Length: 79
Image (cartoon, rainbow, N blue to C red; front, side, top):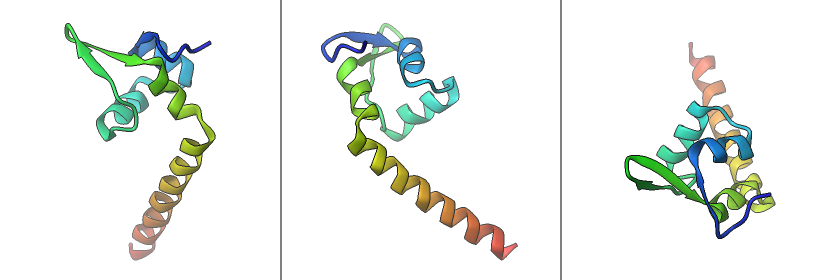
């Protein structure tokens, strides 16, 4: 169970979210999940992980996914 006030490593967060390392890095780079660098490694608050699994965030991610999908379709059609 994820505790909002606890701090997790990137590996623990990946396991909770069931995503690959590359996907998790993409989340960090795009600001989808906020992390803090401590001693050369990233740490994530449990509340940040919980934000990603909430229904509100899920619908927002789906909207972004649809936009990317449509843009990809248009690009392929131009070929």
